[in-house]
Length: 386
Image (cartoon, rainbow, N blue to C red; front, side, top):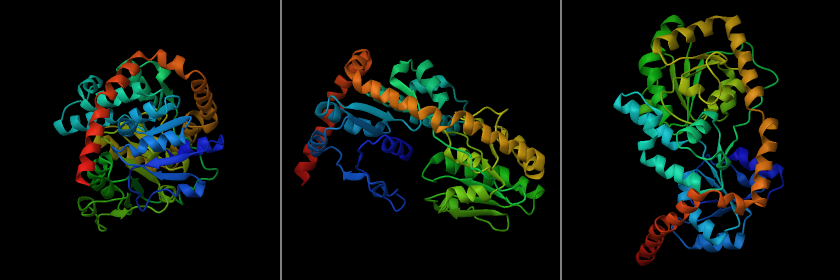
């Protein structure tokens, strides 16, 4: 979301950031960017007055659950506004993969068609004029599995440039994993590291340590801390790039998830090779060109990690592959101009665009008769309580 905000600021958009969520201690200071913040309420007609008075040209929804809550109100109050959904990742993909892990079954793309969240998420995509997708793999799923028209989707990856100067092999030490522990795939990855991966690595590399960073670590995470084993739980990193930069290798044994893993792109940015799974590498690059190794097999993961840590020449070669990935696929100059061309084109042809999206129009009508009236019922219920 911050990347999008910066893109719009560069094009001199006036931005109002409206949220119903409580701010946390770690919330980004939007006022430092001179962005006006507004508090909005769920299931309240006060939003209708707010959005009508604001009368925006463009409304950006942060994930589909936000569109479910406010999309119909925007459509009613500001029908001329272009509605854009920032998907971040496909929730239905992450949840379906997580369910397969819990059931100990192999995930199949067809499983997505049975997910209740899939129906909600795809409906939200259809109701919006455009949805932003950060993973080319997920672009393929949306077009080939769900048969969504390409005109409703726009590929806009995260932007990263490689640092000019990397720390050397000798200057970097130890291993790192980083990730918010409110995100289930991160907790699962740390559990894999603790229970299956780290001990064999430590036996071969007795001087090495693994540092685990992440906000909101629960007690089950903290209990993994063991200095004697070199398994160090550090909690939230004040500067994520600095802790990744100082590590020799990032370990990311992700068994489920979706989207593009920012931690792995950040590792490429600061010249830290990584060992991850195919889900970790998804939407970024293939195994052959990875800035380290990609494998789903635990024994292979361990062997590749040890080899990469010990072999300076191999490590340098992998480091350079990360630089090539960023310049070839995650360059701002490559994607930002096309994004704004799309936005301007949509603004000028919005009604023609919407006429061709019959399913979206149908779902918008159905949304008015379901989400809308549920929201109004909740609003009336809340009024009676007060």
